[in-house]
Image (cartoon, rainbow, N blue to C red):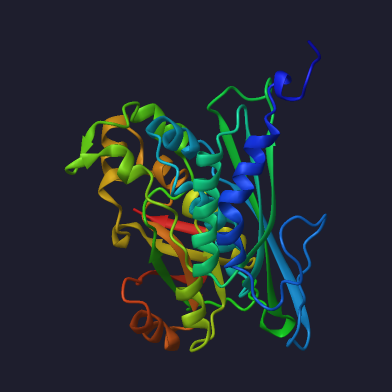
Length: 330
């Protein structure tokens, strides 16, 4: 009996099935700027209508939140997470997402699972007016166990050069505004899984995994609603490392983001994690978003307008002078 690729653990037919299950949905994300369809060696995207465009890129994955999804056999939110972690990053510079590419690796491909993950990306792309123009599905027996998956993505956006937001315009007296997260988003799940080993346990009247798998919030509509109306000096996406690591990334030297911790609206599931795991509050803020998904910095005169535009946003602090770039006041 001769050897085949399938006998080595790679089923090409399952890969073809995956493409068949997603290609029509993926095509729905395309606009007139996408010049070819899935199947080419490269994907073409035409840029038009800009004076001095700058491309802004971001790449990220979902981390061990995937383990919660795989163990719970709930895959529909993971694709949203993958897209959101990439697209939310480039929003911090005022960019609009143009196109997205994904990478999915596994030990043994199941076309139904793969398609469900990718269709989550499709839904997220549609929400952000972004085209899913390509991807790679890699079946790698020996590298991954059957049932294991890993997901990553790459997003490219665009902004006019004179409209780039990078924090350089932040000044003393600016206000700091929080936009809530939808939960843990896609960070800190190694600690979450240590403290919550049973995803089936009941939490607030439903299985815990339903709370843990709430997808990362997409901020495209919120951020660009604000940018169309109000000048913003800085935007920070609060991911791994929490406020402590992400806010300083936009703060100029000599200035400090002074944040009143008591104003932060911490989700109940994070409070339960903190209590059950006996985790110090500073450690929580250095690991999780603690209910703050995005931070906006703006002139004091414009802060009320932002709060009017975004009904769930709220003020948590202001910019002061200081040698440390963040001061989280407890």
